[in-house]
Image 1: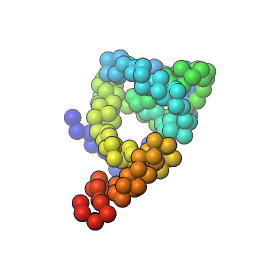
Image 2: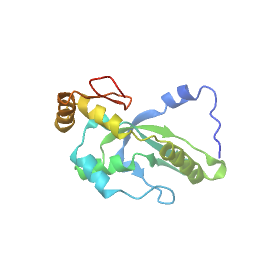
Image 3: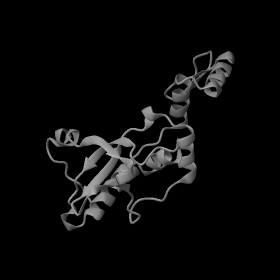
Image 4: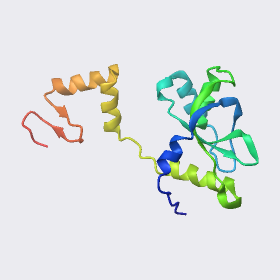
Length: 165
């Protein structure tokens, strides 16, 4: 299925970003993956509100008081696991999908587009992110590599003191 993006969709989306109450969120198990308990536990253990991002939810015409979670289920559950109240508010892009009679089908399509198109970071990209964020282990590895007169270039080439790749 190919979704055609209307002109000027960004201004429309901008108007739909708002704070929502997590107690009004629900999951549709017909397309939403199950909770990854180990991932939720890790999110809860290492919680950083700056990394929450925004959830993506849909308001169905037949249930206007419920936000159906398309993206953000694991993060919302992590909040519940650390004990936030159901009245806690999170930022969300609130969609009003119509689905031409099958709104769940359209939610599932958006879910798939979001999750199938993600590009994971390479191990090297992860490493440089850890170094820059001050991770002790990553910085220790970098120091050992540099002590051996080697360099780890951001593009993945390992260059010795002679400049050979």
